[in-house]
Structures are given as C-alpha cells and as structure tokens.
Length: 86
Image (cartoon, rainbow, N blue to C red; front, side):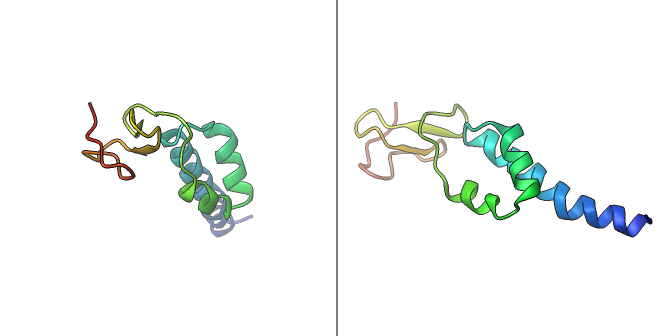
C-alpha cells in the first residue's frame, strides 16, 4: 500500500474515531467505546452529537437544582426553567 492509501484509511477511520472519543468524554460517556464505534460507524457521531448526558459532567454540563434537567455548563441559568445556577 502506498502513502495515499494510508492517508485515506487514517482520514476515513481515524478522524471520526478521535472526534467520537472527544465528544464522548465531554458528555460523560466511555470515550474508548465511542471512539471505536465512531471509527467503524461514522454515523454514530450524529447520535453522540445530539445525545445529552443524563448526569452532571464537571466543566461541560450541570444539573439544575430546581427541575433536574441537564444543561450546558456555560449557561448562566437553566434553559428549561430559567433558574439561575448556584
């Protein structure tokens, strides 16, 4: 195999795998499993992109003390009930 084939395989399988692992870590999921799944099935990135975590992930997502919903860490208040965070 030549260099172009290696670059193609790396781009086609490696980049979705790395992106899947990175997204999974930020959402509190297992990054190794999601990296392997995203490398083999790149459409899994769409599932992971739109999937919200079900628990608080420090630095990424927080859980509202009022309604219990999970929202982005950077938001000044809950996007569902508009309760300011502590």
